[in-house]
Structures are given as C-alpha cells and as structure tokens.
Amino acid sequence: MDTLAMHISNGIINGPVAGVFAALALAALSFCVLRGRRDLDDRLAPMAGLVAAFIFAVQMLNFPIFTAGVSGHLLGGALAALLVGPWVGALCVAVVLVVQALVFGDGGVAMLGLNITNMALIGTAAAYLLIAGLLRVLPRTPFGLSVTAFVSALVSVVVASQGFVLQYWLGGTTDLGGNLAGLAGTMAGFHLLIGIGEGLITATTVATVAKVRPDLVYALRALKPATPATVPAVGGAR
Image 1 (cartoon, rainbow, N blue to C red):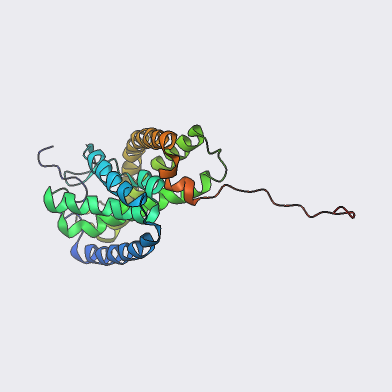
Image 2 (tube, one colour; image 1 turned 90 degrees about the horizontal axis):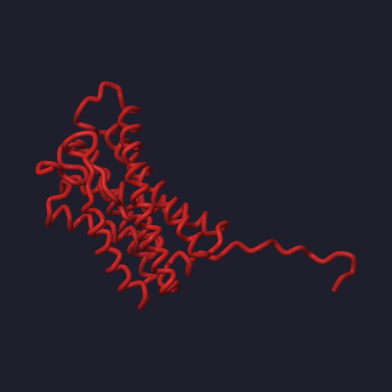
C-alpha cells in the first residue's frame, strides 16, 4: 500500500487522451459553476462545504485493483447529488480530487481530467439520473429515500468505473492483449462490492439528515413527486 496511488496515476493513460479529458472536464466544470450559482443559497453553501469534507474523508477508504497504479474507493457522487444537487455536487467531488492530487499525491496531476471525468462527472450524473427517476416512483419516506440513496450510489460507482475502461481503451499504456472485456469485468466486479459499502454509507447519511432537516436534502426540494393525470369531466358534470 505504500506505493499504491489512489485514483489513476501518471503514466497509466497516455498524454493525448489525458489532455482531451482534461479539456472535457474543464468545460463541464465551468458549466457546473454557471448552473450551480442558481442553486446556491444560505442552506446550500455551507452544506456544500460539509459534503466536500465528508467525501474527502470517505475517499480515504481505498481498495487496490488491477495494477499497482489503479485502485478503487468510495466516491461520494450519489451523496453529493442527493444533498447539494448535481451541479454543486460535481464541483464538490472535483475539489476533493484536486486537493488530493496536489496536496497528498493521490492520483497523478496529469491525470486529473480523467479522474474528475470518472468520479465527479460520470459518477454524479449517473447517480442523479437514478435519483430523479426513483424519487418519482418511491414514497418520500425515510425508507424510500434510503432505497434511492443505496441504489443510486451502487450503480453510480459501477458506471464510473467503466469510464476508466473507456479511457484505457483509448490510451492505455500497457497492452492488455485484447482482454478489454476482462478489464471491464474486473472493474465492475470490484466496484460492485465497493458500491454496496458506499450505498450503505450514503443511505445511512442521507436518511439521518432527512429525519433531522429534510429541507437540507436538495433532491427532496428540487424533485417534485409525480402527480396523477387529471381526467376531464364528461356527461355534463360540473
């Protein structure tokens, strides 16, 4: 573990692909800043700081997979999406990744665009899409919110892991001998187990916040419950 780097280390993906994803991440985060400004208020601003701090602590739980340069860990995208929304949530995760790379050497600085794309963008987006769908069909009770948190966290972790598979296919520096499907399966399998742990942590945290201060849960405020369609009156009824 002394030589194991969290996230993608320098040299795992070649420079051109890393540069493309860096530009993509920068453009996406700029858009998140513009959209996130609309959501910021007296509740969301301090909550974003707390969420970023919590995600930083949670991401220190690290599990080695594939090679000595790649590892899996809890992400926090679903937690951020539930509590502060997709735009601010993506920014929270991205800030954590930047601090970890620059200050603690977790992940290569040249690979920041790749790591931000996978964990801050893909992970948070996948989680919020599931959250938006589940909260429209599940009851908005502590149980329904817990199920939503668990499922969205689990799926988002697995989806984010496949972002690395795509990146490695585009610019991996080690020849896998055509075994890209094996890499995808390995990443999905390990991250499925990691996702179960993250789902439990996310569900517990969000349910606790919702019981004490439901107004602090962004998803409950922003996503309206589904309403039944109105049936027009017939037969002369007034």
